[in-house]
Each structure stands twice: as structure tokens, then as C-alpha cells.
Length: 272
Image (tube, rainbow, N blue to C red; front, side, top):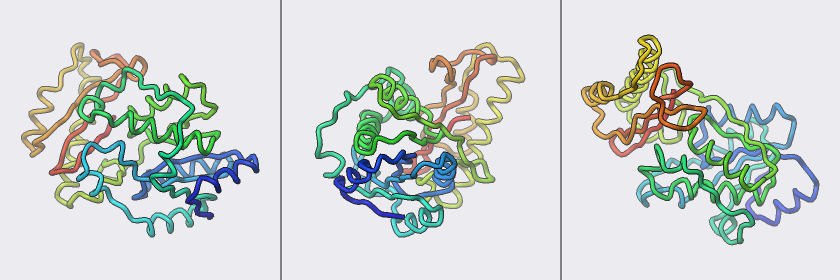
């Protein structure tokens, strides 16, 4: 595996006309990232992983500073997976050039996380766009856990006619139903058990909506259950129609339940 830190070395690679499968990360690699990489390697292209903790997508300096980092461990994982290139850019390498594409934020960005994290998705789309302009990958691998992010990047790519195809991959979960996430490293064992209870309740709620053929989806009772087991702060619990991206109302729609809640200072998101 070759480690690249400077944009000039990326340009040299592009001269070789390689086709890249690209996996952008903020480090703190886990089995979810490993799944993305393994899926990327199936296409037989050159695989490139980036590690860059993007300050522009955090809503507080405290959250940015507390984000779990372990570069030594990450490099070990990537070598084991036989990744071709690891790109570890500096802040200046990413943000020093003028972008060609206009940042496009679809109206879906104002829902769910966008409502509670102003500027977050603009920061995400901006940094991924910069990676795309630098690397020109053929494929971009993203996980469905971050569904809203994935959709917004798809729409940005389509709007700007960027010749990169997004490949969406399944959410990888632990045995306790918790999705793998870098932020899980900031959870205590007690918090992990509580998070597992939350996700189990949400999954059961979706099954209940389908079984009882609910014609007016409402999560008031679910919120009360979550409050009862100890969840003090919930940003949202919403059913989203996966085709229209509007709020789902009935059982027969193709929907997932999206949630964001806090365990102490750790914010967890998921969708079923």
C-alpha cells in the first residue's frame, strides 16, 4: 500500500490512467469501512481510501476534537485489506484550490440531520466534491447508514454531471443490532447496551406498523418508551419514503424509520 499526502502525487497517479474505486473516510476504521473496501476490491480497479477528519462538517469544536482517531491502527487495517493507496491530505491540500463544480444541496438536506446540524451537509458535499475533483474516481463507495448523506451526494453528482458512480452498500451491524460507527468508540458498555435497546425498539416499531397496517404513522408512543428507558435527548424519529424522500404516512409505503438521539454527548444515527 502506498501512502500519499500531497496532491502532486495524486496528479502523477492520474497520468497513469488508472480507474479508481474510492472510499472516503474520517478514520477510526471499523467493519463497516472494511465491508466498503471489500466491495470496492471486487471491481478489480485500483482502490483508494482517504483519511481526513473534515472540520467543516462538525457543528462544534468539542465534537471535532473528540472524534476518535487512531491512524496507526487504521494503516494496519488497510494494509491487511491490501488497499492500493491511502490518501492522507492536510487541510491545506483539500481546501487551497478553487473548485470547478458548484455545490448543490437538494431540499432533502433541510430534513432529518440537516434540520439539527446547520451547515453539516454543505461541509460534507463540499469536501467529497473536492476529493472527486482531485481523484476523478470511477466509483465512490458509501454506506446506507448515512442514507441522507448518500442521497445528497448522488444529487450533487447528477446535477454537476460528474462522471463518478456512487455504489451504496448495506449497513453492517454488531450482534446487538448496533451499526458499526467510529463514534461507538466514545460509548461506555452501559451506553452500548442502551443503544441496542433503542434500535431494537425502533425495528419492532416498523414491524408493528406493517403488521397492523397503520394508516397514520405516529411515533409519540415510541418516544415515550425511549424516554422511559433513559433516552433524554432525541433529535428526530421520522418515517421517510425511500422513493419520494417525503415523510411516510402509511404502512404500505416503502419507508425506513430514521432516528438521531444522544447518549451523553455521543450522537447516534440509524435507519431501518
